[in-house]
Image (cartoon, rainbow, N blue to C red):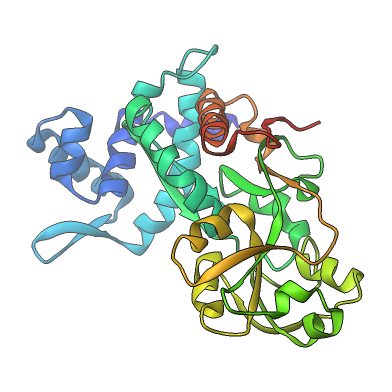
Length: 318
């Protein structure tokens, strides 16, 4: 550690923030405006950074500085957590000032949660923390047990409570599985197990084994579903069932939105189903970060506004 600190002796740490903003914005003009610097001063900072690293960092394309060199791409990935850590110790220990935050938060969630919470979250953040940006990512893990390892690289993941395990978490809202089918599909009405077993089914985010899957609940009722299609988005399920004999399984919150598109209807799932809780989980390293605490509070507030009604609740898990 002492050797690392000695090497820092020749480094101008005042350049870290300009470096962070330049690599994010990829434009001297935009970065200068954000930093409250003149454009010549920002250009001078970039020149010093290029000399320090021995790399151009930003290269021209189409008359603008907007493409990162391969070295700058690697540097940007390491710089994000470093700036967050510095921000944690630089702000008031009792809490972050949202108005002064300059940070990107990465949230992993299904498209149904992006639809439900994303717009309201952006609206709240634009009012309270105009320097904050969000990157919404789709879940990509084939194995739910890998959630904890994924959290090293992101801020929050929204998952069913059964996947939260021992991770820090807060409940956001409750939901339930329902069926979506064409308005003239008679199979879903009769409740005939044989007809339901032979009917074509579609769903989203399905990867064997059927952990946390409604298909597992169907099989438990003696209905071994004939799965004919899966998608990496719930929103496409409307197009997969409208005007067809196919039946989709999806959360009621999403089905309600798709139902408004017309040509489909919502029916109770043909299996015993309880409401399930959706949670925001994060890595323990973020637990006492004031900026992250602000994010969690806003997310929970947004969830309460969007779905906080009878039978739904938010709160701390545990």
